[in-house]
Length: 361
Image (tube, rainbow, N blue to C red; front, side):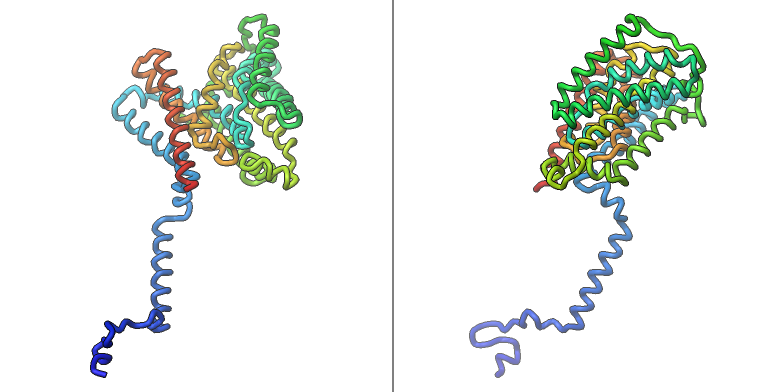
């Protein structure tokens, strides 16, 4: 009896039973945990948690890296903050970002890339310059129709005929480049008309009209992906094509529409390039394929499809433009710039790969 009174028995210590905690204390403990969780949610908003999730950490990291790069460039390179240089960065971002926004739809659908973006944009510059005498609006509409038709044809080949997307788009790029060369006789077509609104016009200082065009494209395509049936089907198709087919989704029409919209964006990108130069030339779209693909990958859009945002590709284009501009300010050779851009893309893909592996564990 004495041993039990002091909490021991003949065989050893006497511990309280697991359920010996009073019910009232349990309820108080539960309330304390809930209150602590609420305080944590108030301190760290849910949208901020989402930005640093395994699916969004790549895109968020790019935005932070771009911010750090701009701060360092502003401090270390006085020429970087000149108004003319800032406008150059914005103009470079607009054409690439517009093309990348369309390419994002292709990548989200699980069809990798459309390697005819540069050729489509280049031919669009010829059409823009040729129709500019009918007015700026007509010239822009002509490029949109051209791009949409080229994208529609590729969508039929890839979506309905099940052709390989890489081989198909390379072949289409060769065809339309040849047709463009025949149309222009290999020469530059000078535009006859006023392109000042689209070419050099600006709403406010540092906010050219071309930036408004880019923002409009990003908002429209982002809306289609996030808030329409087409967007949900595209994501599912890119994430799990077999499940999309079993679910009876309109896989063929989704792919056709994605390619058509990508073609429209490529045509509009050509109009932006042509308005800056007031001419059409097949060389204006040179390098746009690589830049658009790099923007998509660096921005954080999954190469396997189904994951990413259109705005991610736009930020990727901005990051590339900033890097390219800094390299120019250092007077580095064009070959060195290509090497740096390639390294940036490789680094981005590597980081995305390891991030995907860690999220699966």
